[in-house]
Structures are given as C-alpha cells and as structure tokens.
Length: 525
Image (cartoon, rainbow, N blue to C red; front, side, top):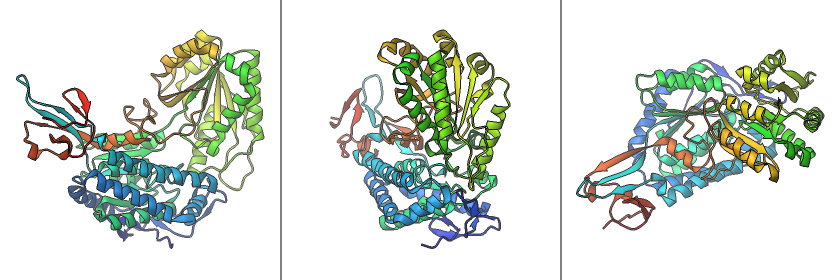
C-alpha cells in the first residue's frame, strides 16, 4: 500500500502546507523516502469542524452501533497484515516480536471496549424516584464532544492512532482528531486508512475521525486552541504534557487534558527479599529496566534499599548485569538527545555516583549505554531533581540507613504511575506500612513483581498524582478510561417518553442501574 504523506481530514486526503518532514529509521539514522506535511491552521480547522458536525449524529448512536464499529476497526487493523508490522519496525526499531504482541493488545482493547458497550452499564444510570420530599431525578453519562489525541512515540499501535485514548473516545461516541507522532508517520497513515475502511463499512460520518501529521509544536498548539474541541488525550513527556495542559487551561473556554507524562516508578526492596532471592531479583530488575530499551512509562527508574553488606552485593550484581547486556535501539533522535541531557545532568551531580554507563556505545543507530546510579537517602531527599525521569535503560539506587530512614524518604517521592515493594512473608507488617505511604504517591501498587507492562482490564489504574498525570482520578488503560470522555447529565421530573433508554422505567437496555439506592436490572414500577 503506497504511503502518501498526506493528512486525512474527514476521509479526504489533504496536503496544503509547505513544511515537511520524514520518518527516520532508528537503527540506521536514515531518512524515509516519503515526505509528510505539517498540518496548516486551515486543515486543523476543517478537521475539528468536521468532528463537531459528526458529533451531532454520533452523540445519539446506540452502544451496539459503536460496538460494531470498534469490532470492524479491529478486523481492518488485522487485515493490514505484515505491512503494518514491518512499517512500524522500520520507523521505531521495536522489533517484530514486540510489535506483534502490541498489535494483539491493540485489537484486543478494541474488542474489550466493544464488550463494554454491549454490556451497557458504563453509562452509570442512577434513578431516584419521586417521594414526598424530593422530585424524580435520573442521571447518566453522555459523550462530551470532539477529542484531540496526541500519539505516543513508544507504542506505535497501542498508544497511537487507534490506541487506548482514541478507542475510549470512540466508545464514548466522541469524534477524534489524532495528532500523529512524527516518529512513526507511515505507520499512522496505514492505521488511519484501516479506521476509514471501518467507518465506510459501518456508515459512520466521515468527520468522526481525522489524522493530522506534523513535527512542529505549532500544529499541536493550534489544535488544542480550536474552540470546538472538548478534551485532549496525551501520552508523552512532562515538558510536552505540561505545555498542552497550560494551553488548554489558557483558552477562553478551558478544556480537560488527560495527560500521562512521566514516572520513575519507585521499587522498594526490603532486606529479607534481597537475602532470599538476590539473583532472581537482580535479573528481574535489570530485565524490567532494559525492556524496550527502557522506553516504557512504567520503567523502574528508582530503587530504594536499606544499607547492608548483602544490599551492596545486590547493587554490584545489578551493575554487572546491566553492563553485560547490549544496549538496545532508542526510538528517535529526540529521545536520544533527551536521555543524554538527563543522564549528563545526573552524572555531574556531586551526590550521585555513576556505576555503569560511562562508556560511550559505538552504535550505528540511536542508542545509549545501560546506566546505573547510586545516591544516599539524605541527598535524595534534599534535591527533587534526583527524581527527574531518564527515559531509557537507566535506574538509580537510593541507599537508606535503616527502616526509619526509608520511611522518612518515601513521603518525599513525587507522583508516579506505579510503586512496588519486594518483601518476604516475615516482612508483611513492614510492607503494609510502606504501602500506606506509597498509596499517596502512585496509582498502582505492586507486591513482588515489576511495573513494566499493564493489563487492559476494568481494574487497571494507569494514572497517578502529578507529575505522572494531570488527572489522577482517571486511567488511560482499561475500560474505565471511557469515563474521561463522558459527562453526567441529570433529568428532573421528565416523563418516560422524554428520557433516554437507559433511564426509562422499563429498562429496555437491560443494564445494571442504581434505583433508589439498590443495584438492579428490574424496571421501575
């Protein structure tokens, strides 16, 4: 399938601008053959305006119709076959094994949201019938309107054009304008074409989806400022996420930004765990740190331990294993530059010792050596910059003097997506106290595991206190992600004929509802 380099605005190819860019093969640093156009203000306006027009129709779509559309998108993505995988591999260097698994996750989450829609209770229908003291009040969730989604660089399928933000917005009934990531523009175009084929087959208004390309800040800023936009989904760096958040807040009509930005995902390893399973812990930690060349938002970038001879031995083992593993390929030049800058700043810190990573890697592509830092708890507490994320195969040990020192250090942690404890059976009372502190710092707490990897299930929480996200009450993974793009509306004293089906007395959708404080599928008499 030929790649055009164009935007796709409500199903129509467009290339009005003069500024262009290319993809870059991260293994060779060579540019791709196709030039992609930066979206112009006119093209951005057309995309959002078309979305607003489509929303007049799709906001009243039944859940079953949206479910059929998501299932068709999954089928069209699978029909892309090896071309999709090979294109993404060329643009990201992630490898066909990793990308094959990510494709399954992407189609799986499309079908998972379809199942959510067919079950129907996601609308959270609540009915309080009239009494002598109150009127009849009924409440449910409705789609908010056009959503802008900014694709992530490190997941070209699952957090990109047809990724979790897009799918959860589609499931809500919201049109989506995707700002494709410039690191994988050809992959993005192929994905967009699959979505459009599904839209045609399901008779979805063309404005329900648009793809905008661009490698300039101006494209994203112009998109966020469009007055018809209602929300933003973003996955990326703290710097970019905060810029998007600030732009959205400065609009005459501010809109919510659901930004997942950065996290060092602290791992606390208690002495009993080190004594009982030092080698497996070291292997697990190193595997997690270097997975995907460390380019996971759940990469364990911080390890808190209590000082002892065994702890020092454990640190040396991790150092040795990090040195023995060949560094992988980084996604693009921007990530390489950012990692070099972040690591250099930490290396120059007087309170930090660099254990590995001092040797420059001789590599044809984008790369950085596996790196281990070590510092002491008092220095860590004194300088918040030691919690800055290193987006790559990097981790830092924080050496605490004793349990009291560890408990004194944890409250100084910034907000994170995850926090982990490794402990043995005899350390569970201590782990309980530590988890009580970590619960204030992270969205997902893990025992005796590692944070890399998430499950696309109802219970998943992929979000956390700032600076991990701008909206810690929400998740960007799992079916409850749909709630970001829904808002509640209450109906007071409306007759049954004017109510949406989810709130009617007979419960024609047969969904679970709260009726007069009781969960039930029964109708209202």
